[in-house]
Image (cartoon, rainbow, N blue to C red):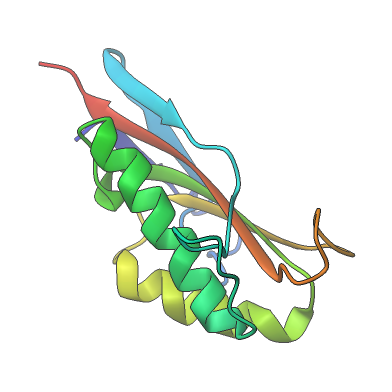
Length: 131
């Protein structure tokens, strides 16, 4: 494993399935993605926030695969939505793609993205031990 969870007993537990911090071990290779929006390969943008979130994760999977990594290598998720109501939808989609809590996570509600039809954006940092 290229990282370890940091959840000090002296602070409240995380509010969901994530860790307060993640330490990346020396010698790990890092990958940083740009924010991925809910747009498909043919530039289609679904109206549904769940479908957009799925596209975000599929795009991230493709980027990580190109680097020889998977979503299990992610040490940090940064997500942005345009409405608080989208938080549980995003969370359910993320749970389909990753399990456990060996990653840090932030979700921010924003007023909008580059185009008004976008509702969610996700970026990640991944780390994998180099042997």
